[in-house]
Amino acid sequence: MATFAYTARDNDGRVITGTLEGESEIAVVARLQEMGYFITDLQRRIKRPTLEDVLQRFRGVRLKDLTVFTRQFATMINAGLAILAGLSILEVQSENKRLKEILGAVRADIEQGAPLSDALAKHPETFNSLYVNMVRAGEAGGVLDDVLARLAGFLEKELALRQKVRAAMIYPAVIASAAVLIVSFLVFYILPTFVSFFTSLNVPLPAPTRLLIAITVGARRFWYIILLVIVAAVYGARYYISTPEGRARYDRFKLRMPVFGSIVHKVAMARFARTLGTLVRSGVPILQALDVVAKAVDNTVVTQAVAAVRSSIREGESIALPLQASGIFPPMVVHMVSVGERTGQLDEMLMKVSDFYDTEVEYAVAGLTSILEPALIIVMGGIVGFVVISFYLPLFNLVGAIK
Image (cartoon, rainbow, N blue to C red; front, side):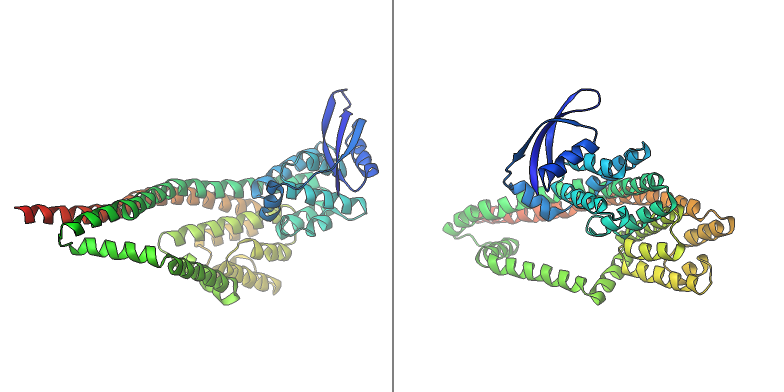
């Protein structure tokens, strides 16, 4: 696909310049005309891939980029813009190279007669089953703009939740990094000078100092072995987690962890309720919606519970009873779902559940941060204190020997 630099005028007569990728000059002209531009100049540009382009291809499409695209696309469709025209405009203005390529491929499939949902389904690494099924439901019901707006709201809440968790971890990470740098400087640069000084004076070194020296010498001599062991351990753990048995045990462990397990469980409940509520509100059949939810919760324990619920519903049971029998879903979730089934407002109740757990996660993360900060300071202070004491104990022995 080639890149073309264009100069054009819009309907108001304003001059617009930019670049656009296309299979040929004719295809680019057609797309610019679809966007309502009058072309005054078009030149093919030879573009060499930069390091940023290569890295972005490996990174893929971030949730933030997908969220912005969905919100803008929903606004364009709601304003009456054609799907092809909206995709062309968003493709041009997208700053993410990978998303730009995907939108170009989606647009090309639609031009050949494919529905939007089928074109999106060809890129599962960017548009997951939740996204595709909601778009398909919007196409079937003729409410694509409404469904895209709901999907954008869903992605915005998911993005906000991730950003809150990451922001809460920044301060502890900074403290830990600073402590590691300080200890490394003391141990690897200051300690050898102290050791040489006391060795020349034949001053016996105390046990803490000898222990610190042994650790330092071992780290210097066998750093490659230590690094190899760490890499092997990380790789082995990731490989084990990638297996079905390892993934199940890891997800079960995450739910049972002290302090952290509660947050993981609440995040899973918020994602379950928000995903199912959004799908039901968009007109997706309940069995198909539960199949999508099972893949979206990202925890095999909850996935198995949702699959059991789906099997029970297929046999004619209500949703609330199998939810209660699973033992994963709290009584509040079961009760709200039961009320939603009886009143015909299941989607509304599920969205209320998701809002409740979003708030719970926010409070839990804030509480965890308030606990982590002093705990981390105490641990790092203890390590730094041990290093400093190991430095000064030989000085006390030297003063005693002089006296």
